[in-house]
Length: 478
Image (cartoon, rainbow, N blue to C red):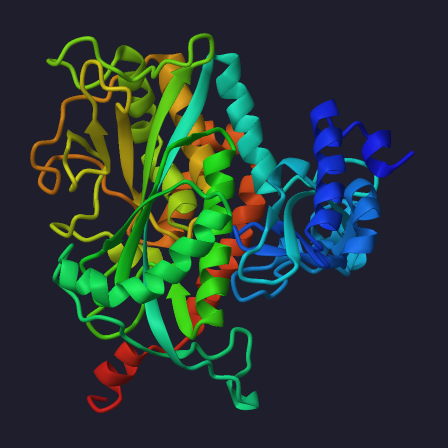
């Protein structure tokens, strides 16, 4: 029996899909298949197998080193894997042991920019058959299962800002290498501040068309391409999808956009606020609602124009607000992302909601009879791990439903309302996450401890660097 059969990992539909993949591999003359998983940062990692090995790899998996789960954003291993239990108190982690990637047959794609290449998203397991406890896709699936038990499905639509630059120098000289290496030298495709002007869009269009063409071939539900406010800044929006799909879409989008752009001489960055003169911060606005499982109807549609949302919608939103400070470490997981939280900047700085307010953390967009009724969380950064970002929303909103929370009144002046402030840096956000019983219980205390340790390692490296601000401020003065 195969690993998949021994541990009952596939349904009958999964087996049917696997057989169909094998047929497509032959019919479309696919030569290699990338087996990838989203790591703790939402970054794709994995291995590539030749087509002849795919039938085995589908059912037996491919080996990967467990230290991939123990790295911070510089790809440095944070835990001492040579001590007992690999620093985590479990023998599976010790001495950089192996784990297995098992492909999810529902995720198969053919990569349009890489000739003869297929792609599958995978789930990591230990050799015992136990699932990897720090697999963020699994954590999100578990949150969705809890929501389903309450009678709802989760729907999310992506609105993602990013920068696309011309690549001038990839910095590939040996002295540029490091951990991390020197960032590439780039040039702008447009000047900024002409938001949504056709002229600026036309300047971006040659690069955006390359992205659009290949993203469409991946069956990503692209809705619009837009010229954003800042220099070389763009935005993509996507049709709403249910469950795992929108998080899987975001992972694939980021990996695909960067790879496609690089092959054509561009550099795409989902970093929130690049240190480039005059550029603007990028956000990830997450549109979300619930569906009744029995009917498929939007559960947020209000019955009366006098109320912002249905009772279900108001309670879900109240939960999102109640746990907003703790969830910030998941929606804004980088040191850089907190430089976006500025008053009067179309980015939130405190926990408040408002009807069609772009300054509030949560923007309500709903009306009687409108099937698109939803809330929009405007606090996230495009570098967030989508499984953790969406899991935080599901867990928080579910708590609002269970406890019948009230979100309070709308904030007509979101930057002046008396409301709790969002964390001002990643350290504060991690402390808020550790103090949030709902999120700790939903994600698991073991995961929260692990995640906080990885992020604290990033903070420590950041604080150890001598910045250009310090050099300018003190070098001549003292």
